[in-house]
Image (cartoon, rainbow, N blue to C red; front, side, top):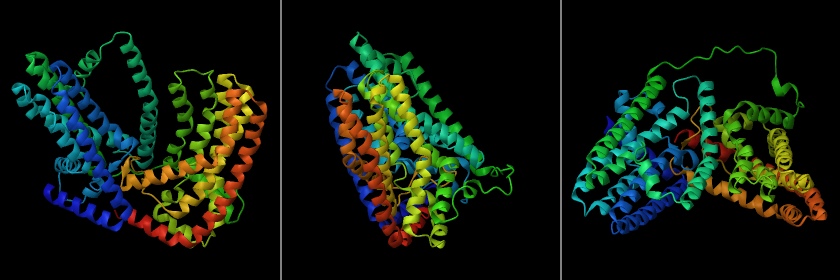
Length: 528
């Protein structure tokens, strides 16, 4: 049965890539990137084998720990979790939970990332080639390390998606997990800065790696080196840690799958208040008002949308850590511009979140301009107050109230420019997104490249078009020119409104022509 599931997996992957040229291009780039990383790893490990044994052992342990962290955090920040072997899709098959887990693990190992991990792990034998005891131990420990990579990735994704509960429970757990990993990035940067500072004060890197070797992410990779140096007791203890890590992860994953696939789905018992139209009873009774109300409902109730709003507090925190907690410096005072930049591009693929329900939008016969304007008003009702609040808070903390006009004008200008770009981009194409209640880390194979390309293009356009308001704001910050500050204050909103109006018009025209093809793409994502 496992072999049958794997054959189906590759057949689905082939059909998906054949149906979407963009996903095929993304898949090819992924393969080329994996080959490049393998070449880099092979050269690095080859030269590591020529160094002192203690240094080489630290390199292998540190690289293995980074590899496991990459498997855990990579799907969250970059690639997403492959949905081809999603447990919900495997549930109808006559498989036990253990067989399902084996099939999913095998699918992970036979993907591009899995094959690259297997080959890269085998390359560690280039380090142990002169140490027979270590090479023999690696025959056992390397597979354990590779399995920890895959199982840890699936376990963390399953726990983050809140499997085993109702939809609202899943979404809340997913939101908390997404917030945790989003803010883990600046926290990690802070930890790295602390390590760098400690290293400058005499802390040896090998000591740090030695401590990592006693953790679940480094134990399996440290065993061969310990055996080669005759440290049998520490090697045995670390081997036990590695086995225990794999066992605990497997049990957690097993319980999640059992609760989510085998147990009956939880039924919602929440009572609905009858007679309330929500935002639909507040907004004007016209196409723009109806779209505005629907968009505002999504941004306030759909956790897929709410997750995106985490970028707003993330921006000043990231600047704060990069500036080494200098709250009085100019960079933290300008962090409001980054907030406006992120807020503007949030709806770059707004239609993607409609999924196949976009068909109901088309059935209403709404015109493109009304749809574009209504969606923009919906996201603006939420993000513009948050951008202003972020500006006031960051300026207040920094104490640079003289910079409020340029920061406020530039940040609002970037937000409005982003809305204009997004009004056009989401009318041109859609990207695969999690369905309501799904894990936020799911993806369609080969879709990461297209999503990154689209997002990067939107970022680049906003950055270039926003230069007339960003440059005066920067000049005002570093030179103290009040004239430049007021120029940024005026130019930002005016330029933003012009770009927004142009985006609504151009995006509306494209929407009228392209809506059927957008729906066809959305349906293909559902069937992937």
